[in-house]
Image (cartoon, rainbow, N blue to C red):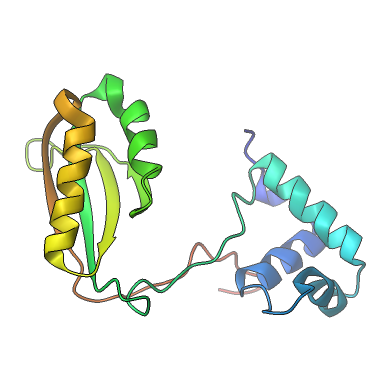
Length: 169
């Protein structure tokens, strides 16, 4: 996957991303409404979205559920010290689990922070989250040299990266 250079974004691309990042309208033809809002054809909107997805400028367009509103009141960031040569395999395995909303690699900060893989686990209770983390541990096996769970107490942000429009500070 190539990385799209944001400097190469046209004014239309910026306007399209700004419209998309606000969320798709909950109607039968959301791209037609966005096209109308931008004064272009729906075909152009769909073409540019596909092109930006192919280039990597947009990773995906997906629903962002509010886990707490869905009854998942316990959210635990499981942190893992995974053997370096197994990180990619283990990360893909963790990320494929239906109870993991996102999984990513981060650098260790030795000696204080030995964890290099993070996986957000959602459950109705802390106990359920801890049971799910035990499932992950069983799957990971000897690739894991240690783990912990950090529980959320508040939801502070529920959006992805926001592209600023030209002229905004």
